[in-house]
Image 1 (cartoon, each protein chain N blue to C red):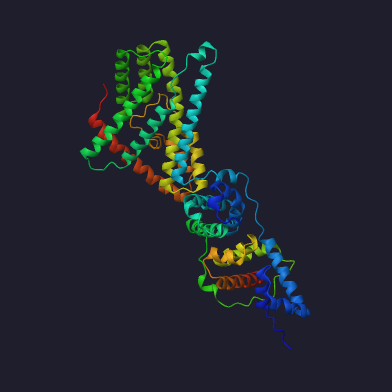
Image 2: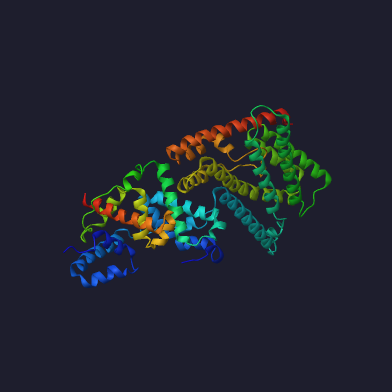
Length: 328
Length: 165
């Protein structure tokens, strides 16, 4: 007599895992051969559970996954976090300014964060606008782009004047001179004059027109600004690369490390002119090489194409600027 | 089981709760630690993007596994390391033979698993590794309970056959 419980039925019963099947259960109680067969199937199930055991997750995965955000939002959060850090730093500077030490007490300045936040926002707008500049010259677009640059310059001048005059207010004459000096410096940067030389001249001129307290404030403004600019540039560039190259997490991490090692630290104070973070990739072969080498082959082709776009957009922007601006 | 994670959990808390399981699934499906980490990252990015919808999902684990499976397929396609999915072979009859013997090495089973069609791999991983109930797997695979039972049954039979060869 053939046993009615087929191998298929037995496997289905085993796969139910915990759910009872009265028909099969009843049969197994009465049929020793089937009980023996069911034991083999259950042992197989246990073996398979062992073979499929969850692999241990790598250490650090939690840390990397939990703070994840969408690529663009993630970078924005990074920038926001940066702004918060700057705020915290400013608060710290203000707190230390209350220290009885005379030297420290001299640097009780207005917080830099609002100025940096405004400048950061402008930097993003300029980067976006530059990316959309048409190949053929369009007077309206050019004018809009130049207006953005002028707004950024004004923000910078007003922010700096406010900051420098916190302890020792600037006279009207000083403020006018400072404005002219910054505009002149900016114009030199806009036409890509050698930045280190332009920066030295700028510092010398600023030193000549400010008193000692104001100049110390200027140095502090520059020092904090440069650090902030470096970090903001990196965050913006990462954001751009992640989006444009559709980077996966592991690639993005390698790119970040390459950027952190090779992204140049500017010698001049926070002033963006028409500088956009990807420009550094065009200017520095070491940086673009490091980023390229950090990528897999498939991404390298995308990166080359991205670099081509950056170069073209930058040339279009420079064409507009050269037409409108020239150094004093 | 979290009934309504969007109401009771933050995305971070959900990630903490399910991270190991998602990683385990991705690791089994992709056979590569780095790819699994990337896939895992993508899965939780999707969670963040779709957090609003997640509140209405009845089975968050099923939903996560569905997203994980699609992400793994995407990673495989992107990496071009995957063999063509043998959908045509899925319903083909096979001679499964007896249950896999107790002494069989886990490595042999894993190798056999790699030779199976992706759907079989997914369903077996959800069943044996994730310990998901059939209802949950059916939801994750967009199948009826009956279709899932057939698929799971066939997957085990194919696995037996592959282990034997």
